[in-house]
Amino acid sequence: MAVDKKANFIRIAEARTNRIIESIAQLGNLSNTSYYEYTPEQIEAIFAAIQAELDNQKKRFSEKTSKRKRFRL
Image 1 (tube, rainbow, N blue to C red):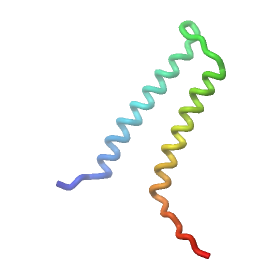
Image 2: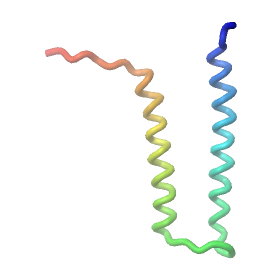
Image 3: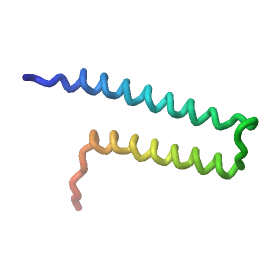
Image 4: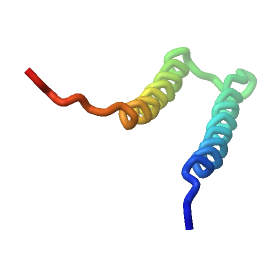
């Protein structure tokens, strides 16, 4: 049974990306000051953590596609 890697990637990537987008939208609901109280530092910490993880995961994709260069003098 041949596995279609491209189709699997698209199927899974779309589902996971949509789930992440929905979670980010839910995080935005916390901005309602009628229900929540927060400091600018807390908001900065949240988005810094999210951005750091995004950067780490993006780096994983670029590292796998780039080949290591051999050292030469």
